[in-house]
Length: 178
Image (cartoon, rainbow, N blue to C red; front, side, top):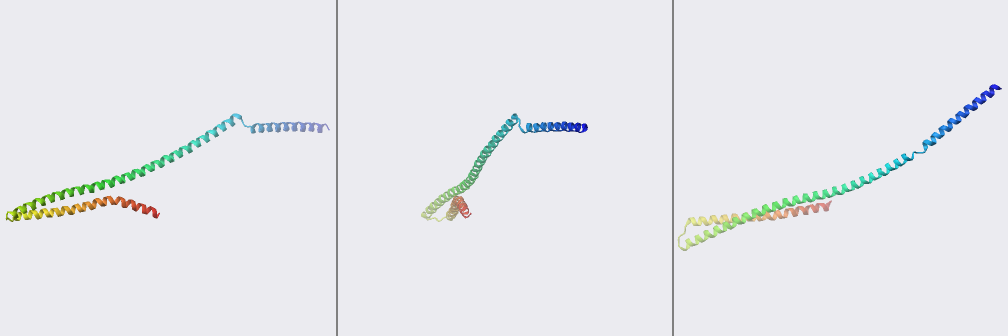
């Protein structure tokens, strides 16, 4: 029996050591489950900073989108301005040609008047000079050419004015079809 008592005491001692070890492990687990207040505060600070950065990023993206839209609108206006400048240059060229042709017509008409006056004077004095008749015919031909060029320049000027209007009207009609 003495061996039984000894074994019993050994088993009891081992059980107490096992119980103490289990208690120590349970305390460690409980201590590990309780977070460090400094770490919890640091984690909360990081979460707050992260949400603030996300808000700033969203605001920057929104502002960037607004700026991008404004730049696109300015680019569209710039393209329209370039088109209008090109249209104006074409109209100015047409008006310049028209002005030159009108000056040519005035000069040709003045030459025709002078030739006709010289021809009338020669006819009144009874002398029919062939070179005056040729000169008058040449002046009349030049006058007719100048009138034709003036008419063509006027048509060109009118077309230069109408082309942008027709193009914008065609653009509006295409937009309505879409």
